[in-house]
Image 1: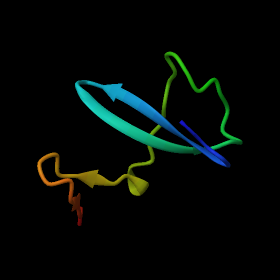
Image 2: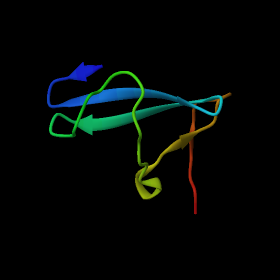
Image 3: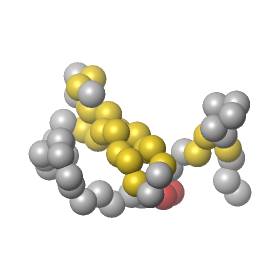
Image 4: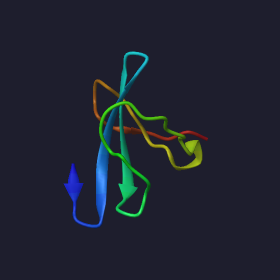
Length: 57
């Protein structure tokens, strides 16, 4: 999903849906099957029932 200077990439892995935000300078292509590397220090998790963010200590 194009949002000006950045894009949202929708990822389905192991039965889970993820959304990644990338800048327009990130290497593409931004469609099809691609390898991704997730920076878990910047990851946010949400409760699927409430939608509230889960704070990881």
